Length: 266
Image 1 (cartoon, rainbow, N blue to C red):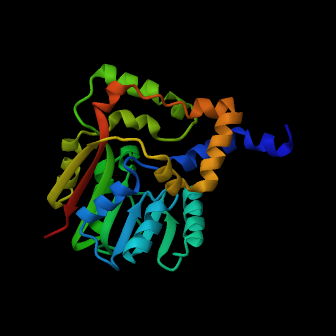
Image 2 (image 1 turned 60 degrees about the horizontal axis):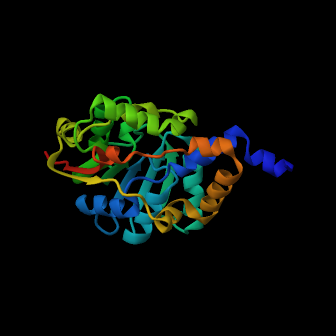
C-alpha cells in the first residue's frame, strides 16, 4: 500500500472521518425544518444553533430563510468544517461559527430570536444548565427548540444493554460522551427540562427513528465524504468495526427522537 493509503488508515484519520459522519441526526433536514417551524422562525430571524456539528443546519437556515445564524460547537474540528461548508455554500456573510460550551454560552441575555439544539443535550453533563442557557440568550417572545434522541417508552435494563452493545463500534472509536446515550430521557423528561427553565407553551412531538435515505445522507455530509466513507469501509477492517451498528428491531420500539419547543415569556 502506498503512503496515501497508509495515511487513510491511520487510526486518528479514521476517528476523524467517523466524527464527521456524526454530523447527521435522526430525521435529517426534514426534522430540522419541522423544528424551526414549531419555533415560528421568521424570514430574516437571528438564530443560535448549539452543537452545530459540520454546519449543515446553519447553512440550510441561511439559504432557506435568509436568517443570520451563529453556530457553536465544543469541538474545534467541527467549527473548522462548518466554516469550510459555509464558504462552499456561499453563505459566509450570513453565518458565523465559534467554539463554545452549551453550559456557558458566550452571548448577552436576549440576543437571539430562536435558539435550537439538535442531538447535543444527550451528551451534556448538566442538561438543565444548558437549557437554562438557551432560554437566557433567547429574546422575550422567542423560542427554544430541542431535537433529541428519546426513549419512546421507558426501556428495560435488557433493552438498555442491547442498545449499548449495538453501538459498541462507536464506543470503540473513542468519541467522547457517547456512553451518556444510555441516560437519554423520555418525552416527559425533556419537557421537564423546558418547564424548569421557565419556558411556556411547550410543544412535544416524538417519532420513531427512520433511516436517512442515501440522498439525504449525501446532502448532509456531502458527496466527497460519502465516497470517502465507502472507500474506508471497503479497505479498512478497523473502520468497519467502528461503524458496525446493526440495530436490533426491538430497539426501534423503544428508541426514536423528539422535537421539544418552548416559548420565552415573562
